Length: 147
Image (cartoon, rainbow, N blue to C red; front, side, top):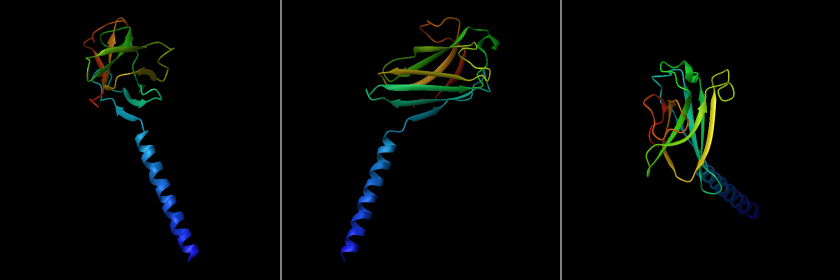
């Protein structure tokens, strides 16, 4: 009888711990958003990962494959600029991806990371002549749906 109570109690504790671990892992998962197919650079593929850090900020990571050199586009530009929209603000320039061997490898891969206090709702990339532009140009390279 004691053995039966012990097994029942052990199984319930193990089950409870498993459920708690599963719930904890689901709440701490980063959100992954895939970029839509590009009409300008059809081979480009990428994803955005949004996660929270210990300070409750949003960590935005972008990984892109098959991103053409920016000077090879129909309308040659100098760099790719990354834009972020939030619920409270229109598109904001959050950084750039330079198109040279330091930033885009020979395998045409790019990586970008930034931290923001405001939750992003959409990320997109345009080709621009200057890094400090305040409004996105009309050459849209990649974009996500709203998330």
